[in-house]
Image (cartoon, rainbow, N blue to C red; front, side, top):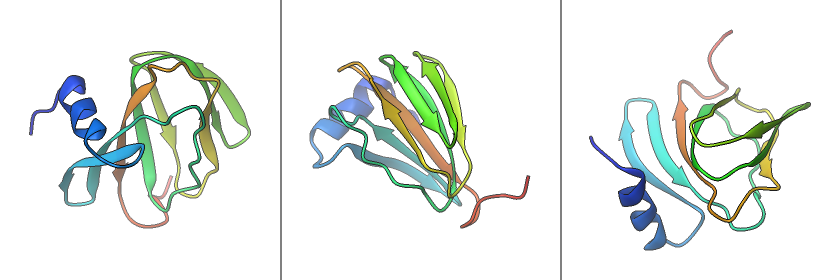
Length: 106
């Protein structure tokens, strides 16, 4: 598999919704995610890793809140409330879901 951000964003633009699944292998699922104005996510059933492609803003991860920028890596355990807020219009991120339902043991 080889996917550039440009290719992924083009595929997303031809898809209805803010995310598109690009690749799956075993428990791994790779998506591109680009919400418009508001991130309406709810907690997920598997562990999740984000790698920010473009844009800046803040990320709420349970009780924590952090600024983010391109290249940042953000981890969210399964079941934790999280969302991107106050993000720029060019915000886009890779999303990696993996592991079993309920998340991996710490």
